[in-house]
Amino acid sequence: MNRRFLSLSPVRVLIALAVLCLTPLYATVDDALSFAHECAVPYVKQGFTIREDAWGGDLGVKDQKAVTAQLFKGNEYWFCMATDVKGAVINVHIYDSQGRLAESEAWQKGRFAAAKVVPKATGTYYAIVTIEKSPQERTHWALVYGYR
Amino acid sequence: MLPRLITTALCGFAVANALAEPPPSTIDLSKFPAAAVEDVVVPVPSEIFIVLDKLGTPNWKGELRDNLGTNTGNRAQIALLLGTVIADGFIAVEAEDSEKVKQIGQEVLVLADGINVRKAVIARSKSITDKAEAKDWRAVRSELDGALQDVRGAMQELGDDELAQLVSLGGWIRGTQVLTSIVGQNYSPAGAELLNQPELLNYFARRIDEMRSRNLKKEELVVKVRKLLRDIKPIIGKDTITVENVQKVNKLTTDTVKAITSEDQ
Image 1 (tube, rainbow over the protein chains, first blue to last red):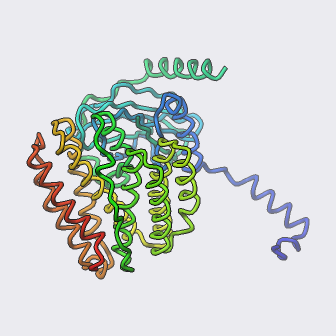
Image 2: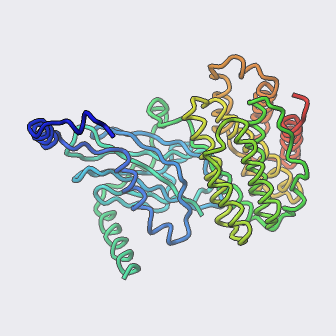
Image 3: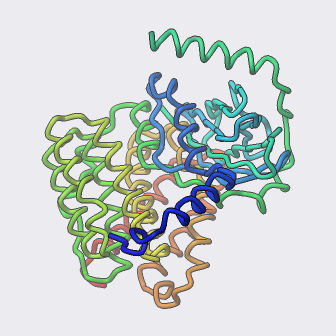
């Protein structure tokens, strides 16, 4: 037990609470990841296995990032992206090693976006993530993918 | 109720999609390498095994090894060996050999102990054994994927990132050995295409080249693995991977697996 914490005076507690109330609550990649997993739920029900690892970070508006993946012909993949920033609009699209759009389906709705690819060839693919709009300067995002 | 919610959500997504701006049909990839999250996402083994399932019914039992190798106490060897043993777990799942899966689960624990990550895989090992007992093969695959990630994660926490890469490499080498064996026995261009992994090869080679630990980089086995990557690259760089090239990759990976499992380290 932290004795110093126990000895806090009521005034100190009030000051601490006031500071907490004034501190903006920042979003985290972990929160974004929870939403990305939520985004993937319908595909799990369709038999897709979602990988346990995930990718993410924070980006400014109109910034993009590429996640490079080795995909195999014969599998289908869904890439699911999310942010926990309310009011943000994000996107994910899949391109092949020549820079050609490779997805067969894609959708985006506010803080969620997803793209499906059925690779025509085994090789390197790029999931390009974009923050289209956001009320915040930096927007946390997370990406997971599933395969079947 | 739940299916209706999902349908409603998907309809909502479809409407949203119709309103979204279409993405460009081509992009300039040269703008992205510096902004990439990481070099390349290493596929989990089950992504490859699922494709192999669809290609036919190979003789998986014939691919199983009696001897999973000897732990020599050399940490680089243990990491590579652990990767190969986890890959064997997938082969045992394909062969639906629950006894072998259980043996592999135990071996994973022993090897994990050798590189101080036993704690990270205890739960997985038990789960692998339980699910193999119940013959829930899909779940065993998932646990094996998870074991690989747990080991890598635990090693990264210990600051052993470079050794963690060797676990991935060991799995990739054994997986490629089996893949080429199966594709070579019943060759088809579609099967051979699974070897088209140039970026993955570049990624593994870079990880070895950039190792900070000079001792690890100079380890005989690590040098052998680096040579293997260099030798394979031109063979799989062709548009169509021929049966002869599949056999060459099989020979190269078989020799390397022998070196990893050998006591002479």
